[in-house]
Image (tube, rainbow, N blue to C red):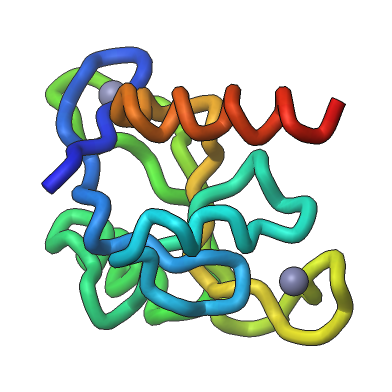
Length: 125
Ligand SMILES: [Zn+2]
Ligand SMILES: [Zn+2]
């Protein structure tokens, strides 16, 4: 299982099996990562596979909305947000984005995912 880490403090934040694509489907099969419409700056976490520390932050806000900050010791980097009140439509306008969003530039992704991103951006040129 691949780990995603805080870019600032290197704490492990979540594993790849917690990730959804922008249409709320589990990214167990890495091919599905290609379904990102244009939200390539965000990662999405599924409520059913929430890491405990993120669940705690959402519990603290009564499952309304708020920010997600890194759980690393002495690190308070904002790495994402959640919003269970109002949905945001995916850029394709067909579905709402998942409620728990991670800012991609705030986390270190596993090396093979970065490779895949580079490959797909080459193809589109
Ligand atoms: Zn951190
Ligand atoms: Zn979409």
